[in-house]
Image (cartoon, rainbow, N blue to C red; front, side):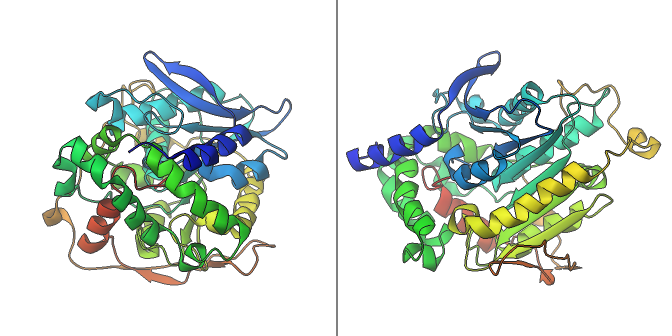
Length: 389
């Protein structure tokens, strides 16, 4: 169901604030890219939205980063202002991963640090590219820091709803969108308690309505993630900041805690939660998120770049160039998941100026379970992720 005239007006205004250029990043793959180059900048920040989302979700974070840094954000293939061809394989995890790798290579500048900021399923793409870059010979363009919001270690299982005909999903789209908003947006947002939350209430349904249902169906049916070993290889080399919405009903904080535990394998890694936010935390409380993000960007810039150790080189995948990438795990079966839940303890310090909305996490338990997995995908199916999920 196409956007209404009112929704188109909302999108037009949002697009005007964040203009894009259509760029062919690799043969046959054109993406809508928003960039703010800053000659002489010593850091580039690359933003990656979540599944079936839009770069519009990063408006406030782009404004923060662009004050002193070069900025790049893009709509993934099939989303936002990027092309939406009716081709099933075009939306595979491998294709989207390779798109991100191409954007990373295109905007990497020697001597300038690169930080990737990602959300939800976009975090899996970022981790996959980082793992492939570290494992390739020679190494690919470096990622010097990863900020992951609403992230998970294992993707949700694909429910049967994705096997419905596309026209049926199109008829269901308004209801699915409303269901997503009930879970992804905090009660304070739905009540319109701040200007940022009121703006999100208008933007979310507009971005939802612009999603192509074939694309969403193809995307979720092929959703995947890097293996635990690949995630751990990234944690050994790349500083990471994980931020969760304290009341995230789609990706509970304990799921992000599981990812944090895998990433806590060498390089500095912190996890924080933001009060009174759900899945769209960067839009619901941009001040708290920006305080955490700003401190992290500065810490990455100040950190000396470590040389690749012999141990890290030995663990790299042999005879693999960055262009060829690596293979990724398929969706895990229920039988392969351990029944026991493990506790992970971490007590990171909050950066100065983080404000009352942000806080470090204490003990978080658990793994994304069957109920959370089904709920996330059923609610967020094609057209229900407003600005990244």
